Image 1 (cartoon, rainbow, N blue to C red):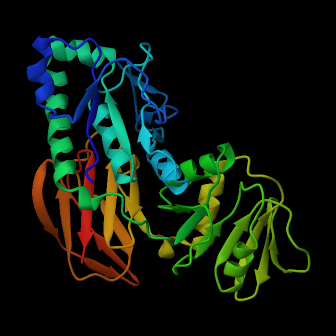
Image 2: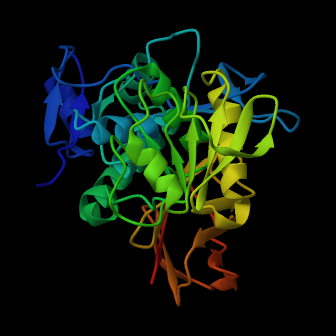
Image 3: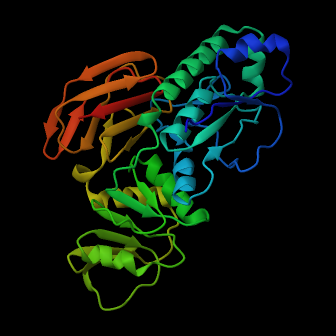
Length: 360
């Protein structure tokens, strides 16, 4: 069943129809609250200490911080709950680029959810005034929405489970998932330990209770990560200030001494436990992009900052014979591939907001 395209446009008038028809929405709603949606997301884009007009931008000397909601769609999906995101931009003091509405749709759909396209007041006013930048962003949104509709098979795919995080309702595991996505860990989320193979780091931090299956999975050869009380008698491999690494069967358990207080640093810790050479996906030259690798050979790259004009160095686990770059704004492009140990590397050029590399 196709995922519907829903547009929020209050006080619709007949004079607006030509503009609205460009998006070809399946449903147009007004200002009413839509039941069974998630409105807790942040407006997507980048933040930094630099300013350009009324918009936050990245400067040469500061790392851009990404506000992203892809994790929220994936988190809701893992819990078996609604994955329709409905956050809106309502802060008139903070202007946002018009094309971030397109970004909100992309991040939701890549991660198995949907987004109600809510046009913020400044954008709406600019559209109705025939502002050139607003109309350009609107046309780009229409193109991307049509491309997503025509390529729905690229989205909502099982994530490569190399790093898998167990989640449950509540802030602790939600925020851990958030920072794992933000730090490019490309995590799979689940409510219980999957029966499928391939999990190398199993994160059970933030849970109220760690299930015994987590310890069983570590004993079979993986690394499990916990932050709650645990059984005694494990052999210590290494003791750090904030955690102890134990051997357990064929694998290991990283046990934090306290509950996770800094999910951002924790995400980096988990990547270090895995090691960079075993990461599901890795990007260079793209500090504002978030990758997501799927179990069936797709690499999604979502660009949260300004469009990238140069090549991006991208690497995924697995040995492939060919790769094709798919983008809403350009025809398919074959990419040259490079084998790097157990990974495949490509250099996709010119990513506007979304790129999907299809490996075969």
